[in-house]
Length: 431
Image (cartoon, rainbow, N blue to C red):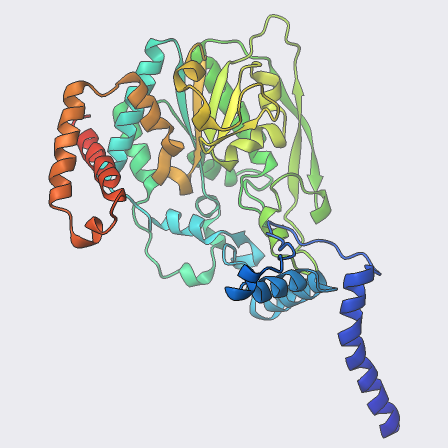
C-alpha cells in the first residue's frame, strides 16, 4: 500500500475515533449493554451564577458527558478484560481473584483469618445480651434462633489467592461467638460448620465460582435443617417440603439469583465458565392440618436466599412474617401495610405474638451481630431505671469534664457522644 493511501487510512481511523463516539452518544446507532452493579449516573448540571462562581459547573458537566460517551461501556469492559486476562486483576476493589479463577470479596478472607477479631470479652458480652433477649422472648411465648452463615473463604479456603498463604490464621469472631453461644446456652444453628462438612462430600459446590453468597444448592440443604429447627423450637408442624431431582447449570446465563453476583460486577467482555451449579426441585406438600410460622427475620443478604432461590418464606411463614434487612428496611414481603423503615415501627408491637425471631448473620457481620436489634430488644425488656439513668448521667458528666481537646472540639456533639459512651460502659458493667 502506497504512503498516501496509508496516511489517508490512518487519518480516517483517527477521525472515526473522534466522530463515532459522539454519533453513538447522539443517535444510539447500536445497542450497548449497560454495565452491571450500582452506578450513580450524573444528571445535567444547572448553569447558574452559583455553580460558575464555585467552579462546580465544569466538573459536573464533564462527568455528565463522560457518562454518556458513546461506546463507553464497551471500552470499560475491554479495559477490565485486559486487566484480568494479562494481570489476573480486577478493576473492582471489593473483588479479588483466587486460584482457578474463584472470586472472593477480600473482607470475607480477612474475617476468616481473624483480622477483625473483637475480643473474647466483647463477643461474650454480645452473646450474654442476646441470651437475655432470648429468655425474655421465651417468657412471652416467642423463640429465638441465631443462624450463622459461613464466609466463602471458610468453605473454600484452598482457593484463596496465593498472596494470603503466608498470613497466619488467628481467632475469628466466628470462633468467639460459637464458644460463647455454647457456654451461654444460646439457640444457634451453625450453618458454617454444616457447609464445611457438606463441601467435602457434596457433588455440587456450596459456593459458586463467581459469587460470594452460598449457592442455590446450599440454600436448599440449609433450609431443610433450619426449618426443622424452627419446628423443634416452636412445636409447630410446618408444611412439608422435599428435594426431588435437580437441574444443573453449566453456562453463565443459566445461573440463578446470586450465583454470579461477583462475576457480573467485574464487567468484562466475557465471563469465566462457572462450576456446574445444581438447583434442586423443591416440592411443597399440602397445607391441610399444617401451621405456618409467624416469624420475624433480621438478617443480612444471606437471608434473601430463602425467598429468591426458592419460596421457603412464601410457603412456610404466615402473613404477618417479615424480613428486616440489616434491621433497617422491610425487604420481604415487598408490599406491606406498614412503613418499610424499621426505625419507624414499634418494636414491642412487632415482637408481640410472634412464634420465632430469627437472626441470620454471615461471618463478616458477626462484629455487628443483630445490626442493633439486640440492644433495642434488650432495652425493651430491661428498660433503664431512674437510678440507672442517674448513674449514666453522672458518668457522662465525669467523662465530659475529663474529655481530651480533640473530643471537646466536637462542640454540640460532645454531650451526645459522651452519653452514648457512658451508656455503653454502664451496660457492660451492669449486664
